[in-house]
Length: 196
Image 1 (tube, rainbow, N blue to C red):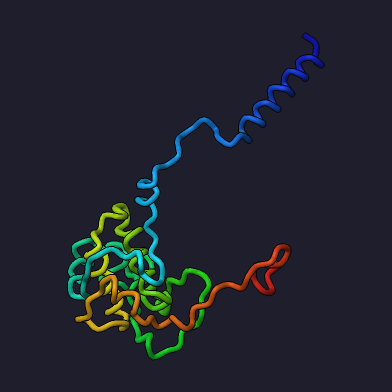
Image 2: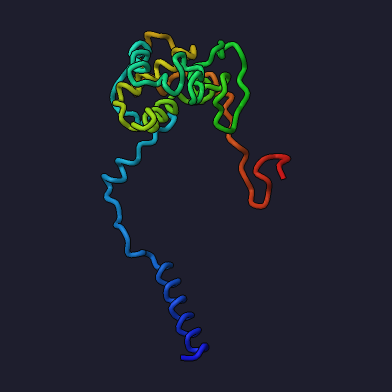
């Protein structure tokens, strides 16, 4: 077989391979069932309409903070003595005006319970990502309680307030009015003003 024939055979096989990989299916896997999709669809919106039944208080959350070893990463006081972001600001954030922040802010002035424009965001994050290594293992009651604890320790709610699917979305967050979305991006322009 000469080089031209070998080249032709290789080219035809390459084109067939490319066409096969561009087909609607790859011959792998299967379409997920509706209940499988629902199991992964756990996002909680600002309105909280997706929140599950349950409730919790700051006092219950304080006990859970210890029992679930939150201090191992976030420190005993939640003020970043650990390796993870600050959860509890060390100063009164209600007294100062917050600067809008477009990136995840993790410093003392921008603990999530202070920076987030919606209390439901805190619940959602804890529910999905905590505790580290055992994500998704907390019950809804535990998530409500830990959320209430963080909100209380950051002077957002009172210690005896019960957080549940009705009360959590109504919490007025310190940064609710200071939250800013990035400007709409147009093709061919820099994403940030003055950035090359």
